[in-house]
Image (spheres, rainbow, N blue to C red):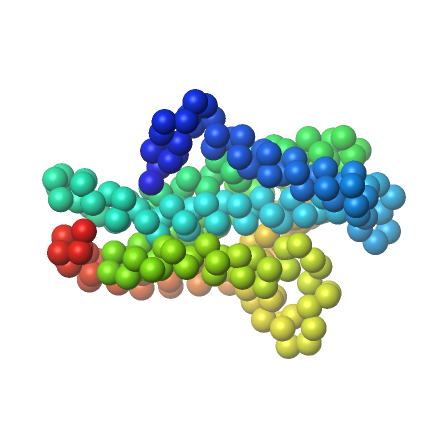
Length: 244
């Protein structure tokens, strides 16, 4: 499902693709920055926690939106598959890119908050570009598996929001890695979603170059999952017609 189809029939149409993440980020900023006045240790500003949270939550919005859209892409594109000759692999790939909108919105929102807070961005912000490429390659790799399985087991798209919610709270995005106990902290450090969120935090918030070894690890995993996932998708796509 693309952005235009998702908001078809609404008064504002595709504008909701920008407004929805903007409203969500605004709520988080208001609640944590002005209601709870949450602060990071060593910080004097009430915006510090909201800024820290959004710097990691923005990439998660992209992951959530993209994976949800990609999982249902083949089922939603049943009419195209049956009536037009084209590469079915395009569907999950194209749907995976819908998360770019909330990601872009969150980054712009974050940069505005940083300026308000007196923490001006540096040249490190351009590192967001290669990090984003790795992020979406990882999402596309996963989408081949989920979109193919969902054709045969529609429950996948039903349970997926709950699984993503569990994954969100299992990933150190709302809380620092230091709060994760023992062996779970090691597991969290190997979590690609955490590594990607931290990469955004490093280059936008902390003005540092992200951990290149960790990003290389995610890149390698993405490459392997992509190759296996594409093969998996191509093996099953011959049976799609019978289940669509």
